[in-house]
Image: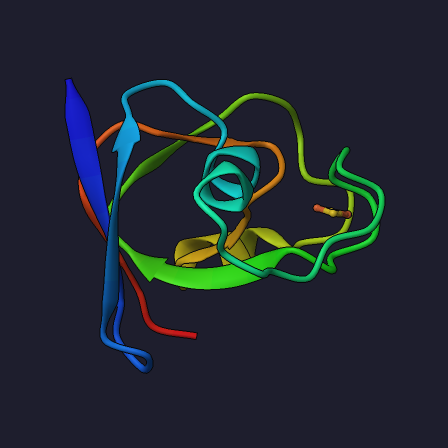
Length: 87
Ligand code: FES
């Protein structure tokens, strides 16, 4: 099953396979996104989204408050439903 990722500001939309890593899958589709460690430490891949994701491992640089506001680390988060990227 595929789920949509809508980028609000650029008006772009992509479909990712359920359970795939968001950063990696978007890169494979040619989307140019910032990243560095790819393991949840640096915060370079930070996104703010509307919708729920699966955290594959623990964030090492976000507070619970930031997570509650929809911030995700796209390198360690997997898609589980359609999301909107607001930042
Ligand atoms: S690339 Fe470093 S936290 Fe995602």
